[in-house]
Image 1: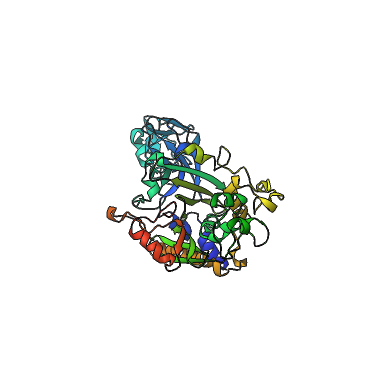
Image 2: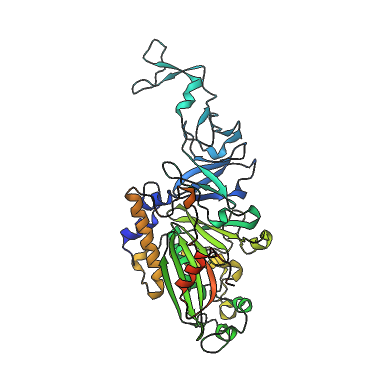
Length: 454
């Protein structure tokens, strides 16, 4: 349980808010690269409570500017892409990707500058001051943020000062053919979205379906001596998770390593490990990362990045697992009650939401908690220990920024731009080995971010 003040600290992300300032110290996705094709129109983007325009110039470089023209506030997302920048359709002012005003074509050869508290419209013999129009544009600077492209995304740095290095997360360093990125609109605060990744226990309930039995095999061992199919067949009550599971956490240099441990017999434990990477993404097993990017306090984009280091992805096949509309909004949503089928809850899906809408199963839980979850009313239990730990390190990172320091893993030296402690894996380990020992061994060998154990 959090107090209202503690909850606000972690969830409010607009300019000037403590968490918003933390978010701005890291590179954040602004759009998918596919949304900004060469020659394509500008995009209206809302990010961390700011209204912005994203465009690609003639050289193919992405630029992210304040959406309102510095002249008289017209919306630049309607602008013309020409002459090396974006041109406002109201009076033709032209801006490059750095926010420099290159032209003010409506200005005459001589203009009259403001004098005192009024605009002079009198002759040059009055107190007005003549200024060459050819240089007046140099005084104008449109709000602009640096952009980089990697991992199928356009990333932006909205902080002050020099941006840090773009982190070399593995999915940001692989060839384009090895990475698939997609996003999904979420009508809730970013934190409850990302806490769904940190809460590993929910997978045994919310996402459980008869299909899991088919994929895992019918004869997997369980402590009671029955096969998986016998234990998972009944989708009612405790039937989805008849095992004893514990959830634990371990602090790392990037955030928090989370593990769910299941007792599956006298010799082995099953573990599932994810890594919460400050401030708003989580690496999960299967070569996947979920990045929850605030639009504002009450909406966010969930970017899902899937990668394979060994071979190119079959992107058409992968895309079929992510069902949504052309504008990245969910087909199964709150308005249609996530297409929940009460009959299928008996035999097919624990939630009644089709496995085809896997991410919408998460949305049902996270959006259902409200636009910003009221954490003053929750009752946490032992398996919520990773949630408690994640909130603490997020609050600690906010305090670092408030004290004028860089938060964790903001990288400014190339030699430090590596992240071996990101571990995301699942499988069985001997009972004689703890999950922390196993993960530390994987990290030391550079094998932390795995799709499955060997």
